[in-house]
Image: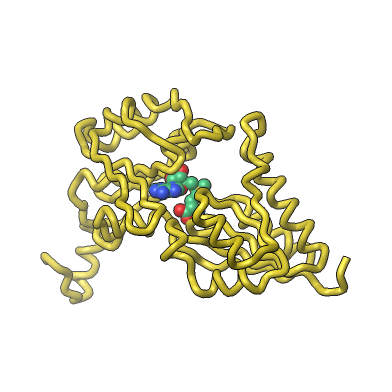
Length: 267
Ligand SMILES: C[S@@+](CC[C@H](N)C(=O)[O-])C[C@H]1O[C@@H](n2cnc3c(N)ncnc32)[C@H](O)[C@@H]1O
């Protein structure tokens, strides 16, 4: 044990480490006593190691025989054990560290509960890249964003006049870990049927994979919803479903606004 109080700073690499990592994140990685990281690509690992030699991967905690939630809890425990030693720990996750990342939020929560200082800094997420690459502005029609398995098993609101983003489409229904990043998705027909309640089966959707290396191009595969049964997916796939119906104005609010003498577009 050192006599220094521990501190946790959680940062993201963005999707493309070379280019997306913020100056703030780089500074914390440099300054930390210890760096732990969960990043998918070797370029990011090299960059982190070059910034701070006292860095270790938590990726090694994954195994095909362990449920993902157990691996995540082991990651939290490793981070907390270093903070309890009184160290300033920088935990690095790819993308935005707080977007679809259970161990980052849990580590911050637990560190604060134990009286340590803990902060999370924002990063560039896959959805941020999607908006840029696919050319969709969520301000136009709105956009809902769900984890694919959560969306399938729960009654999440779906507005066919808005865009829908389903994360983790390539690991639909999986709780485990595949070292090769390829998963069986036997529940896909159920998801296709559920999406069919809101969108035509011929509606075109995009399987999206942002480029993770500088100068590379994203994968954007436009297919019909029914094509989800056969299209190749990976753990890095995100599904983008553009609006499939016109926006329905709220007639009641329009009438109320008009009665107030406030002009509304089209009225
Ligand atoms: C555990 S979440 C991590 C998200 C990450 N923290 C972020 O900010 O984007 C993993 C999911 O993010 C999405 N994702 C990760 N890498 C991606 C990429 N290169 N292109 C598109 N989506 C990606 C996929 O939906 C994937 O299943």
